[in-house]
Image 1 (tube, rainbow over the protein chains, first blue to last red):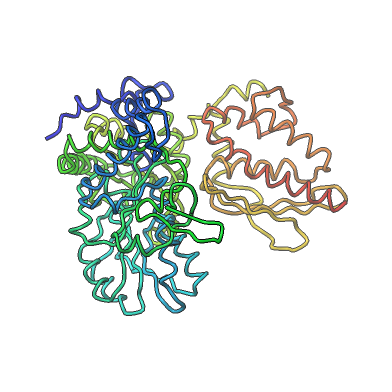
Image 2: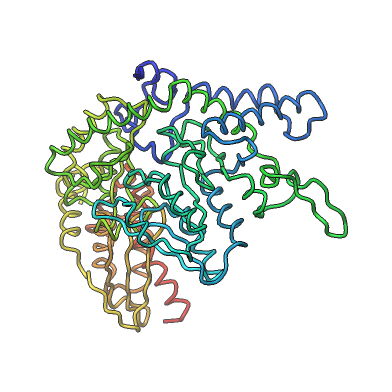
Length: 409
Length: 149
């Protein structure tokens, strides 16, 4: 079990922070999370104590930067049960997902199929739309059930030899359902397809074992898991990373080049890391991984599920709310206030100090399934409390159209 | 006018009325109209606005789409306020509307029901909702002036 009160003391943003005159309740953790002091300290440690470039190990300070930089790669590898040469640092999950689509493009030809689903984040769909347009492949969608879940039978139904890529999120960012990725990978591999997995919404909340799942690629961002912005990870099976092309080349990624146009790229993961990386973010990310690991991902997962169940129990008693995903596996609650447009409700929540997100949450396709043009999303994490849920429920109760408009006067 | 502006009840009713019963809320799809599709990634509002502008005069304004109370009501009020006005008159009203939203001096009497939005900046991210239809109109006026009509 985790000690939430103790954990909250680690986060400067959770210390008496006010929004619109009320105690801040931050329920937008699916967008990004707050940072514990140890992560902030690690970032400033780089600028205060090191400050030199990486991969230039000719002098002592630089050597130290290299070893801290590579230390994070080791930590990330063990966090998701991968090998360190399979960990590429990127600017974030969107960058990683684009890198897979760009890099794998050369193995696709006209008539091939890329399979995804309607609940995907734009960053896992749009790169493949572009690839399909360029190469002449077809982008097909696995049908979701009424709840918005992806049943394995629906995947099996559409899987065939033409499918070369399966692009899915382990946990979707709008509805928070967990997709059975291990079974999906096994089936996809039988047909010779690769699986690229978006774990931006799962890695911060549960333990993810890429070897056990046997996915070919996995992408995630540090900032959604207490780390700095501007840094993310692409995990890829080493032989695939070796075969693919980076979409940027230049300093840091080449071993040798000459004036005749011969380029010898470094081995993965370095061939994908051109230019000076966000060194302070990598070092901060290491602190975030250590922080989460010390609490324990299984403890985090268990606590978040309890908190979610508690919230759903209370919210489902309110007759002015529509809950779209009461059975979500993660901490994402997608809802609307009856007869109130999502943006209007979000301003009311703001006026009461509650940060929730209104919008289409980058999963625009899904809106056709939920039959609403916009929703609200409240996303909790391990530092949120039952007391915060209670106040959130009170605010939901009072979110009438009149109150939503009163925030302007 | 000043008294009215200090009564949130009345201002709220103006917004509610235009949200529930938006005026000029049907597109003509007439190709003699200027049109603008206003949508952005950061905001959910997604509206189409049409305007018939002839001889430097706004003959008609229509709009439709999916939008919040503020975007719907502000566009509805704009359509009533600017319809029948000359371009010069319309530009003067638009200028005053923006001055009001930005917290600067403005002429209340010119803005009529649009004064309901004078405190919209309390929720800073909603300023775009209160100006989305107005921006469409500004663009169409500029286009018509460029065409010399």
